Length: 305
Length: 249
Image 1 (spheres, rainbow over the protein chains, first blue to last red):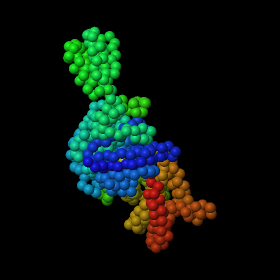
Image 2 (image 1 turned 90 degrees about the vertical axis):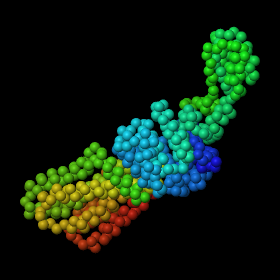
Image 3 (image 1 turned 30 degrees about the vertical axis):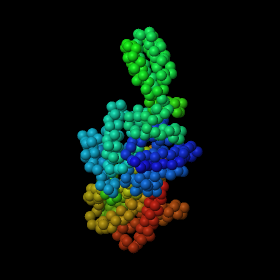
Image 4 (image 1 turned 180 degrees about the vertical axis):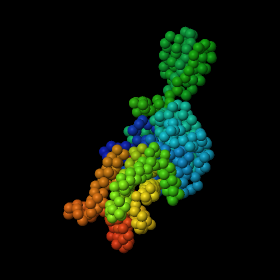
């Protein structure tokens, strides 16, 4: 694995406002890398600097060995881009857009019809852009991002504004892109999206990267707590639970127990304790921290605030 | 890249024709107005007076050409600013497409539409013209293409910097239509007050009118090398400036 994108000490200001500062990270070949953070954190600015659409004030960016700003046209032949809030001509037909995009690249484009088929747009090929639904528009933009068979694909807030069903369908498509051996760089403010889709994520806030790792590592590093919630009528249960190693708290209300601990084995230990003491339970569930909790922990506020 | 230009031009023509009122508004209405005007004037004047009238003989065709070219500028500016505001330009920017190619495609579309409108006018207006007028059609067409390119390049420049679609139309109207007033189209440049004559000297449209009128009347090309040089200079300067200041978003 070698990095296809290298960003070091990137800084970009708009007037007196600092959009991003000291941003550094690497994206490896063949992974889905996510830049996550709330709106206005600097995701799109970072992305557009990497795509060569904006000129950084400071810092060095290399994509596929090229400088995005100076080798823009060379780079554009090798990357695919989906932009936030982009539009096409209202009355352009789906197949015309794909056909036009295919003609813009020097190298041989992908088979547009097959691409539309894979993206589930084939029955819409003669529809005007303005008549497409949000999900269909995004799928068309994915098609346009893939038409030149790029090595790296950039997706900016791909599923914002889509309903959950369309969102899941898009996730499937993005995984498909990785399976074709391409590197995917995406931004999102949806933690669930990052968690389900990304191999590694960088958390960005106020223009600075806070941490970078796999979603699992981030969770276990910043939020090692495990919680088990169960219901039982057994009156001795509370005492038994307190003897489980590395349990930090047992909270009891009526017949419901909440058991907190920091060990990865907490769930196993609880189950072991239940079976050993033949405690009969009527409900059992685990609460595991996710990226949302990591974000809350690192920034002190929820990503939606 | 030529493939991209060709595709983009063709698609833009199709998109234009799909607009409600697109073809009718741009091609149909001028032709109808022209026909209506021809009817009114043609009834009132005997044929002899018509051939003597320089307005019908020279003024009207040139006026029509310039007006259509100017309205092409206004619509070019409007389209580009709508594309900019809608994020279409931004999306196109993330491809290897250059700004010149986008502008060129739109200019070709406008040129073709202008040509179609004028051709229809000539065909439809034939019956109102006195027979036997010898107009160097090929020469006039070439002069028209040179003029239109030059006028459209002013449109490039406006389109490259105009901030929003809302301003596009008024700004281009305010810039373009006063040019017509001093261009010699309405009143001969010689009979303008000295100040306006000086203004007319720097307004590109003056050279357009002089070139078009001259060629229509049958002047030799060498009589208009100055006009052509001025129009070429306008084209080069405006095009060069607009690719420099072109704003994608």
